[in-house]
Length: 164
Image 1: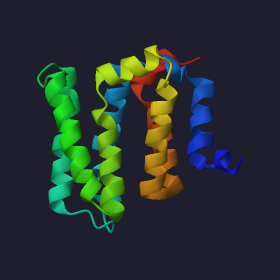
Image 2: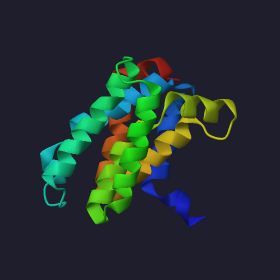
Image 3: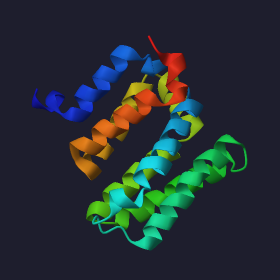
Image 4: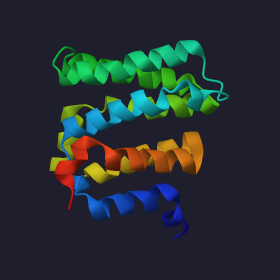
């Protein structure tokens, strides 16, 4: 099974050895995603040369902020879901690097109900959600960005409580 040699899978498995990823809360996953996007993905140096339009960049900043607004109750779950649908439609019209860029941003628009239902029904785990994010980082920025993403999650202060 060649796919298991991919760096995103290997790095995710290493993370799971050190942290109980599957016990992560929705809020912690959202905050870590928000911070990663804000500190790494929205760094102009990273996207330089990737043909990301300024309008898409600023839209991504706005979309990312909705994560915190939702967690703080300033954007309702209904409005958050509508934001997700609207931005998935936009992402569907994009091509190339812009499509990959927006996919990373949109990972943060998973709603609490969707996340908790998937966990409760055992149709997904927190590690599966993270694995998708690592794959999207690999797709957008190669092995270097994927490793940076895993390392960012590993070093995030919220991960301390999940350490094995």
